[in-house]
Image (cartoon, rainbow, N blue to C red):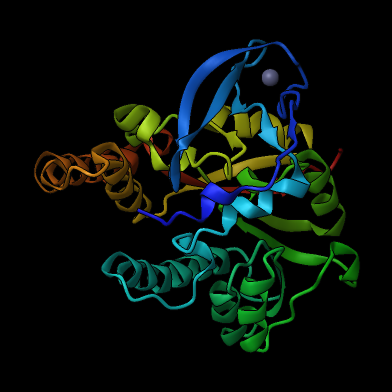
Length: 312
Ligand SMILES: [Zn+2]
């Protein structure tokens, strides 16, 4: 899958961050994973010896990361696509956006919302059409241009926002942010004290992560810098002055993860992919949907709903 653009990487400066959750720099090896768009590139995931958090280390510095997003198969930045998997992705995105809106509207009928890392803007468009005042922030110029075509307000920086917002969403974004602790503090400053913070992330403790091991697509090195478990997320948000009050599922994420992970595991072996691979991915995705109905901590991805803590 993917193409060969990755082979022409510019020199990349690597950095060794400390643990995002507890600040420790003591760590031990956890897993070596491929860049899924160019399997000749290997990256190390390490585990914090203090708190158990898993993260990418060393990692490309912020100035050098953009080139890893340039593969034409990186779906979150695409508007339209011709492949079958691309078509399915678009349909699921429509369903997901409606689901996300209904989830938020359980807490706020409408108001002012910021989608941090809004991609091509379809979620914000769903919110705008439902009467919300919407703002987006998106570092990819190509994706931001598509969002602006929908006449959405895409701001270049959080400083451009006037007044507080009622809801902030980060849909599969936090795991991409180099200075995530600084971002969390900035978000706390612009969120209404009675507001809602909504963060969706892959779950390292999911059943699919356990089944696919180093081929689990959500390791996605070097684009995903962190691999949160629900416990890591609770500690991280709490240290930034937020309290998680609910966790929700994204119904299709187990299917997306399982099919793509199977495809990575099978490599170029199409027969393996279409036989054992297909059965394994259907079984895994259905099992994740079923088990996470009873316990969200098994789920492929989790939407964390949090509120600012009053006294912090
Ligand atoms: Zn730690």
